[in-house]
Image: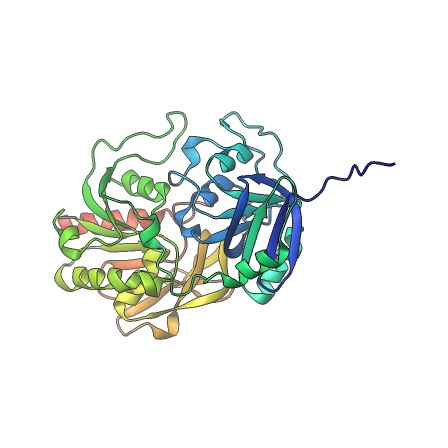
Length: 386
């Protein structure tokens, strides 16, 4: 009798509408449920997987060469992967990079994250764009045993990100200091030895490279948990306040973050700078509203127009919610817009050094067009201290 030599699927991605994608599993064995998004970046898969903003999501990578440079401790944006899993076109090859210290599959397995390869990611991306970010169940079983009905039921039972405060799940447990600056050849990461400003950073899911960018413009950074009060922030006598990126529904996180920000704005003249979820927190504190997007913005090639200068910046983005620019109150101006869909990408108070952007100027991964925003924050603190 002839033997069946065809390899059987070892992973299954089940969408809530019953659509199934089979492929080759790698990383951890098991199941997970999440919202599915796609990311168009050609580099930085490790930074993406460790970005706390991806909590509650499985990431589909549209670029096929994922895993080809391996992983290394320097590129982690937080201690462990936060994204629930990954979907890729081709199975990861052996790493070919002098910085690699581990294979992607081994790294994922050791950290409990599931991945599936061999998927038609173009078809999957089209489905996400047309139907919105679906709820999914992702399973990896080396024996290829899947209870399809149960997987679809789990996908349908996923609560979704609307109404979910995920910042509390990824924030730091206690405050800490940060003085490491951006990576530079040949020294690598070096310490900030002569800070000029004291900055308190609220950690809604802060990426390490954001903190490095703050240190690189002269900031002595104290990171506080997302639930910190205005009194706790001001106890550090800061020269500026930073609001970090993070996951989940901004309206849910705003239940405790917005009153803190409003008190800072009402009682001080401190410069305030926000990124991503921090941008949404600031907008809510100023009286605007946020909305869930169809499939969000996730990638490293998003064109954003600065409405004040007319300059177009290529930016890195990762968000599934957006500030509704139609709800911005008097005294708050829109500063940046997406050239993909016209959605809001930046705001500023008209008469105070308080501003924020939806995209990621720390460029990890992504272009460095927007690093000037950190320099602007430092300049505002310098002006206040003069």
